[in-house]
Length: 193
Image 1 (tube, rainbow, N blue to C red):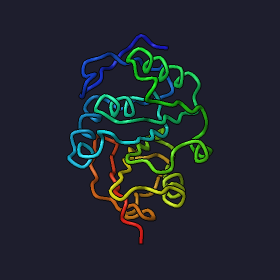
Image 2: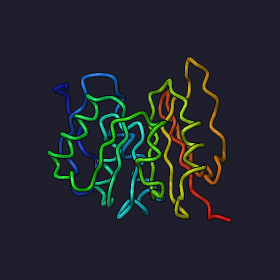
Image 3: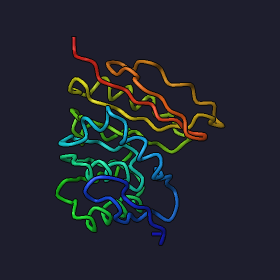
Image 4: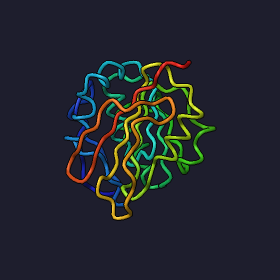
C-alpha cells in the first residue's frame, strides 16, 4: 500500500483521506470525480441509490457515491491488494455496513452483484475494452427506468479500441465528456417495452 492519499470530494465525508494501492490501478482524480458527481443526472439519483462499481480499483467512485448518500455499493475488483485498500478505506470511513467488496474478474461477477442498480460505474484499465461487459449487463440487468451507467475509458488507446456506441441494449448515451486522453460516457436506461 502506498503512502499517497486522495480525498473524498463531496458529500458528508468531503475532505476525508482515501488510501490508494501502491500500483496497478488508475484511481479517478478529484477533478474527474467532481465532474461525474456534479452532473445533474448523477446528482439527482445518487442519494438512496444502489450502486455497482465495476473495475473498482481503489474504490474512489463507489466511496464518493456513499459520501453523497447512496444506500449501498457493490465493489468488483480482481486485484487483491486493491480490494484490501477498498476494505481499509471503508473501515476508516465507517462505511462497511453499506458496502460489499467482491474479489473476482468483472466478467464473472453477474451472479454475485445486484442486477437492478440505480447507478453503475464501469472504470476499466485503459487498455481493456469494457463494451462486452456493458453489453452483458444490458442483457442481464433489470435496470430501473432512469438508471445510469457511467463508463470511463481511454480515447487514444494504443490497441485502437473502437468508439462507444450511442446505444447499448436498453442503455442510451446521454452525455460524453473528454478529459485529456480519457472520456466519460453516461448512459441512461430506457423504460422496458
